[in-house]
Length: 142
Image (cartoon, rainbow, N blue to C red; front, side, top):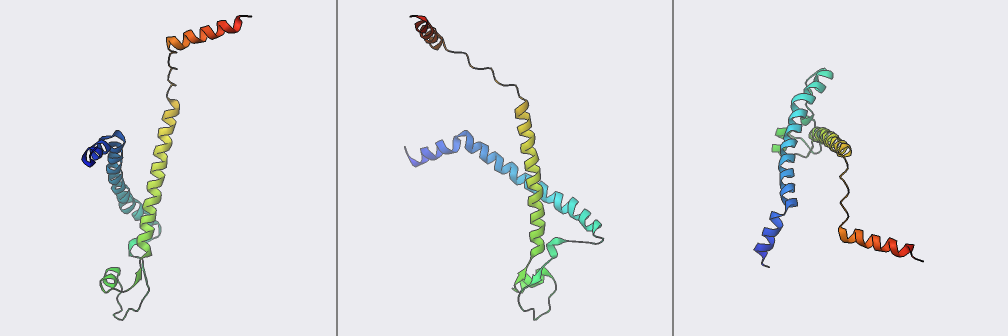
């Protein structure tokens, strides 16, 4: 089998298509969570804390700052070592929310699976049934 044929077989399998659809939907879902955090949750946290709080602007200067720069963008442009922990906090909030939503979705799907009626057992093929009858008859003989 040629490489092209093997790849075609691999790419057309149902699992590969399902995975591709899952990745595409996951990327779109990630954007929704980003918007949820940046547009809804962070403003509420900012309001609760009594001011404009933007975690993405929190940083700690690790190196010398001879120009006394005070913004994260300016420090990065000047190649000064900066620990931008605020951005990490925002991304961590995004991850936690995404994990909670995925957990709730999996939990709901599992609950729906439990509520589905059990499939009827498959009918026993005639030959197996006949063999069982023969076996039972042989057991009854002395």
